[in-house]
Length: 102
Image (cartoon, rainbow, N blue to C red; front, side):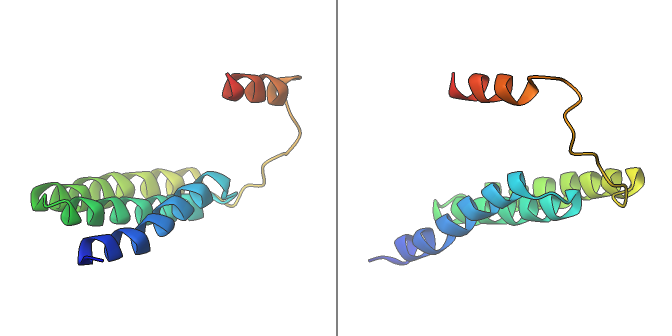
């Protein structure tokens, strides 16, 4: 196996796991940190594919600037508030499952 294949098989599960954990995280800060990890794994994929410019842009623009903006907004809004788990719109969960299945 080549080095590129080794890097892919190491980084691919990390990328998929961080994406899943980003969606399932209950804390907004943890979700943003998993998104940063996902951005870095995507940047490594760009580097392995032979595109150093996209590697640098991915880190500088997405993992740097946009995630700093996301974290700033999260901190500005406050994450210490407790959210109610009661559905405000009846049937919202069923509708969401039907739309996802579609």
